[in-house]
Image (cartoon, rainbow, N blue to C red; front, side, top):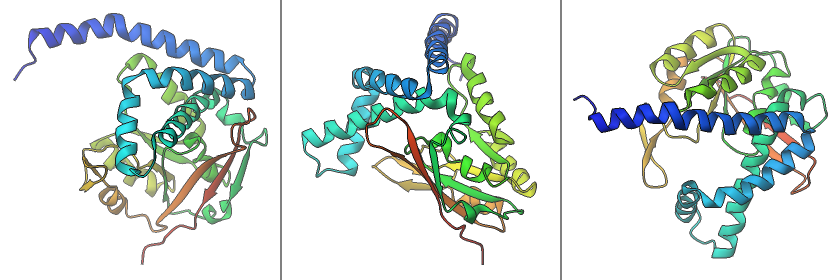
Length: 260
């Protein structure tokens, strides 16, 4: 059934008016963060998001999920966790324009990077939105691998260039979420690329898995479809230094679990 006229008009108005405003705001923040020194950009964006984040609808969703995942937390502990979430998210945004330089600046300590050497037949690198998740692929990049990735297109198509800029640093293929990604993973693995997946997000493909009540989907099917001989390795990004303004990160990579 075709969309009602009201929805079509609303969608058109959003693209004509809301998208340019959103894109202008995001690109302005990106430009400011890029001009600022890395420690200042990270600290300023962290403070900004800590102030603004609790005023958004996503704050309520985060609190509900936190209640489901950690019901033992009291109100004060919940506020501390949620404030830390927004601060970390802001710092990720502030560090985004600088992320490719951060290894050279000595801000990243790798652990277990040797576990990712010699994966000529391709492998999965499994991570999550923890710490500065944009740094996880650099564990594989640092030992000479090209990293392929899957992306969910931004609702605002005027901002798609930011994702393309990120992937240019990875050197591997990039696939749009959906059927294209399922087929593309096989191709990337056959080329010997390391396929990076952030798995703590909602998928509508695959097997439903109950988690925090609404069911999402796991990655078993895409991993099986990719059939990499080298298996999958976990990567974990941890922000060190507490609330200090200088951003430092610890990236740990486990030994790949190889197929039997």
